[in-house]
Figure 1 (spheres, helix red, strand yellow):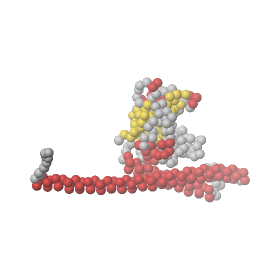
Figure 2 (cartoon, rainbow, N blue to C red):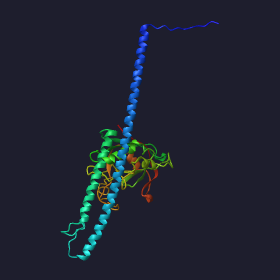
Figure 3 (spheres, rainbow, N blue to C red):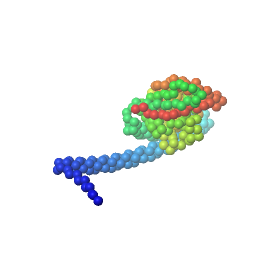
Figure 4 (cartoon, rainbow, N blue to C red):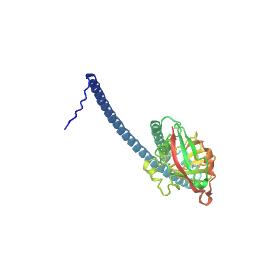
Length: 323
């Protein structure tokens, strides 16, 4: 039996080189491990910071809702007070707007002013938080979002996307932040445009023919970005034609395209049937590309007996932030 032995003989220089390489690799490995630990620590700190911010926003939202109810109750009491004064003091001049008799410093009026001031401070706090979140996550802007549409087969071929340029974060930080987070989390992917009113064309968290039956609303609720915390509005961004607004009170998650100038009906005081009719719906963006795709949507058949719902809803294949 013959045994063959292979012996590798290295020179002193080669052994030194290999030894140096081994040390360098160990040093690099140690550095990578340290960097990974630092990254993990930073990630944990960011998660805790986001949790704190989320809790703060939740508290602010609850406080705003509570204060809004108080304002509504005060308005109702003020109306009753005005009627009673008119009954017993028919000669007195009563201000229905202020709810008091000249010369009388109404405690209700003072309390109402204090509540309104507190609500305004809460709104400013939410806007400041939203502005910081926008800058931290998405950069300085301006921000643009592309909406890729998925028309039903019966619509044939044609333009299928449009681009929204979002409003200034100096004017509409909370609404812009809410919408960008929805897009960033992919919440609008698989949703649909379901009606052409025809003054607005409205999108909603509902499935379309390619994902029929899928619950598109729960992910919005779970994300914490189901709607805005308050009816943010800026006169610098009125509801002109081809702008984007949040629907409802509070606004969202549904958004709509203003098909014509809705500055009055959707601006301050334009929606009288809500509890606080002086509020407005947030207008937070303008379509800057793809109006031909919007026109194509407009021409799809609707059912007038169902408030102009599309006979076949138009899918949102995806929405993405353009960087």
